[in-house]
Length: 429
Ligand SMILES: C[S@@+](CC[C@H](N)C(=O)[O-])C[C@H]1O[C@@H](n2cnc3c(N)ncnc32)[C@H](O)[C@@H]1O
Image (cartoon, rainbow, N blue to C red; front, side):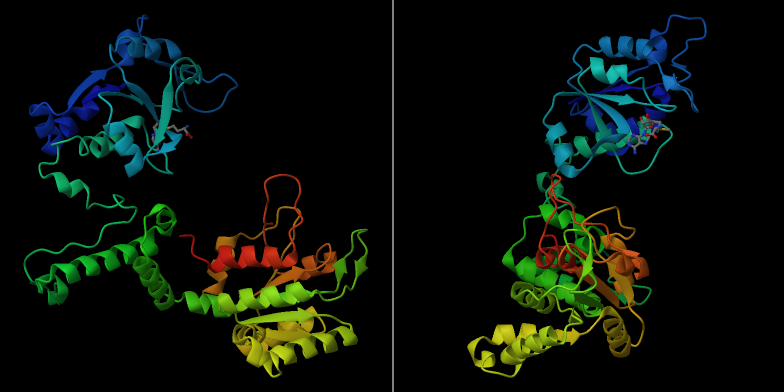
């Protein structure tokens, strides 16, 4: 496989390409490298490769002409990649895709970047090695070369070592140990010396899941997981305190003060489906409580009768799951009563987070998750056309709305609650 590196600093690659495995791979003819310097394709006395940006601003921009001549000089460029923070993130799947090519051209940017017209005139794909800014594309190009070369057949020596590594099955790798058996009083985990390969494999899988959940929960979404893996992850999340986060989250469903569709502040009646469904969400995610508030006495009486039916009445025998879910419901006349009750139960005032389908909000889901680690959070959901302005103004934060795809955004309050609670506490895999 041939890597064609286009760089203003060819000497940057002297040592990395001739040392260790890349050096050995090149000697054995498994990989080869060419280096092309756009400066060699300049036509002026100063060998200029950069100029000031049109429109002003700091720094310099790599010019099209020397770079395009440099690119044109490569006979078989193969896929052309420019290293850039705005490119496709380099991951194992991308590296595997690139390893199937015979030629790759890696264009290293410098200064503020490259004149955009180069991207319009050549089939160049952007590649990023992470959400940070380097001085130039050279170190990033080395990341591409290293990750791709080790997937070239025979490069690694023993064929299976690439297969066990991090990301190969969508997980990070398990921890490794070697001699001595005891280092500064710390022993190697017993299981690794028991000789039972089945148990060792199970322990390694467990560790890989643990490390991935702790450090990169986002990649679990793409991992191929078994039913046993899901169970292991559930246990790890429980041990890691996800249940505490759930217990710290309270939901308040307000029937007043809310807006009607004419924008007037009103009190509206209970909806049986909201009562039931949010109770089931609260129970499923182990929430601290589900409060339903209405200032109307007859509505509160109705609600208490409904809850009584399922919790202490005949409903108990008909459906145990519903009895469990309804056990989380508490009735209140207004939000102040709810805040006071949460404060009494949790021992501190909750962070009151209002929700809305409109506007930008000022709190994100990760922020709510962070608060839950050490304080109660009361998620306030509005019925009818949403919470009245005074509730929004008095809240400590307003959560960013759940956005749909188009302009239509009329989720039922029970759907919005389920989506928000899952975003805060649910697992994505
Ligand atoms: C100083 S950086 C320019 C950053 C650019 N002004 C920006 O804000 O995106 C110079 C060059 O380093 C390379 N580079 C910097 N960070 C990178 C990253 N995370 N991944 C890939 N290449 C990167 C690119 O080739 C870039 O053109």
